[in-house]
Image 1 (cartoon, rainbow, N blue to C red):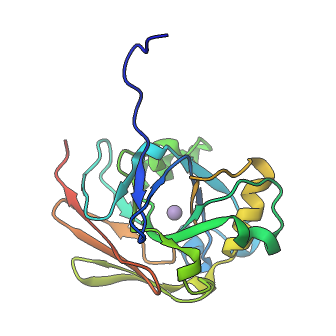
Image 2: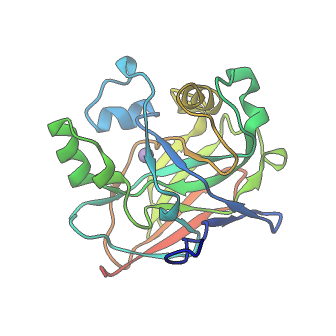
Length: 230
Ligand code: MN
């Protein structure tokens, strides 16, 4: 059968080895650092883990100039550790979770905060605030065998060279192994899946012309710039 039009090519994320990592799906964990949960008005002690998703096509590599998106006046950065899945599994036990990890990268969960807050207030889905074109920048993926344990280590974000987010991976309420175990109860995780694991406190807005840089100890920095609206 002839195709009616050419299908979208997969999003490929560069790996430090020179390989490409084809993206399948994007899962994002919410409120995974207590101080950020509090700054968003929640009580971290009473929140079970939860997640939302983004399309694979909104993932963009380091060095991209992302357009300021429409219908928002509060586009926020959230610096996050990204876990890249390399092996399928369901109902994965936390102690087996690391067998399923391909590697790690620095990421940004860019968010139309005004639309997210409006959706939250009305009890509506977060898609319009979170699943935004070019909203999931990711740095080079480093294979897990070449990474430190990634259970502690600094995670920082600078905006135009000024420190805005400063946290430590050890502050995660649900560590990487628990996050993989949790999502795999609901979906079979597959190679190509990316998991954005939540952000520390200090989120804030961007304006066109800004440069964001995310650093996580042991990984390659992620840098993006904010361009004018399309
Ligand atoms: Mn986030």
